[in-house]
Image (tube, rainbow, N blue to C red):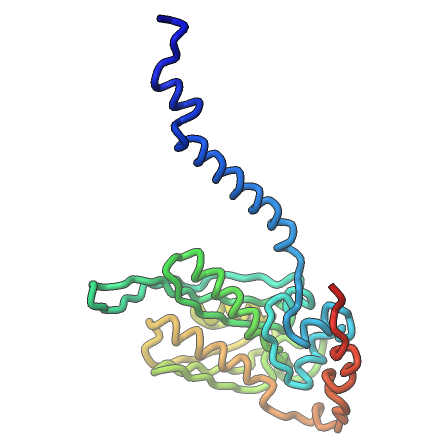
Length: 261
């Protein structure tokens, strides 16, 4: 009786195909995931701009902004701004009425910045919180814009505030930013203060009107106002700088070459 294997032992060892199949699928999935993990970290550019950046023909992010080249890959921002920080501003559930009932998804607002004149804001809606946050981070990196800093009064030391009064509007929310003297700090609500700190602005006054409780519009209006700092042309920007050829024209021979497999 002791030498005869029990039914449970035989199912555990061979399992009539069920146990063997589950182990086989597990090993297959594990092997595929393990093999793709190292390959997924390698950036393979899919745009012309990405190829020029990875091959180091473009070595400065300001060169891209100068020719207003659209950035379609977040890895380009990671390449030029390795110290970029991101923070989730808000996560809110949104619902859609369907014939089967209500479908709930999550909307994430993420701000990214390096504290040295670069700021981005991303919004993404997904069925899961993690997916919405990751998508918002990618969208924020693609929307990174340069932020101009200036002085209040005499030009002593490093720039510390915004160069002029700027205004941004989204929905009913209107945000106005005013330059402040050195040592004032950022006088703003919690959400605009976070954006100004990520942009590297140390001193600034702010005023807002509208339904600022709608945090999404509040953040968007603040980002619009900060991104308009380069829209005001001051005398120190009057010098005429010829553009010349765009990077696509300058390195057309490099882009025409196909990569050998």
